[in-house]
Length: 125
Image 1 (tube, one colour):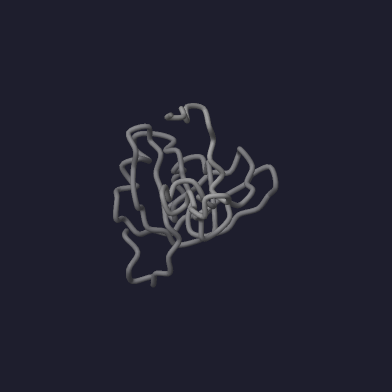
Image 2 (cartoon, rainbow, N blue to C red):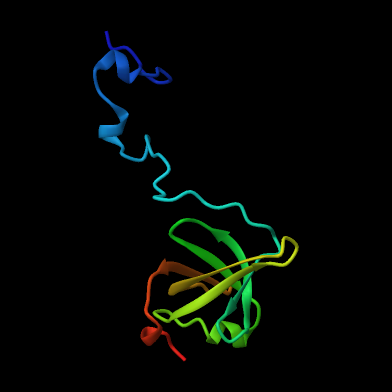
């Protein structure tokens, strides 16, 4: 006689198999190399000429996500562009300057930047 197994849940520990080997998506952990940093909603990115690029939505040890303030600011952030950017948090009176490379731009004006080290000679004008 055949037994129906519909609705029966198998415990991977009982069978000796691992769901992770059958489906690698089961045991996903946080793959970020760096944690995201806490920033205020008022944090903005400004280039080395003082032009406001946009609001910093996320930042981590490896880079940041900026929402372009204007189409002109978006034009300054072409993919591959290396530049010096200052993150300003006006409410806290804090600013930090770093070198970045634009890694991607989405249609919704979100610009992904990676923190890098560049010399003054490498900076785009």
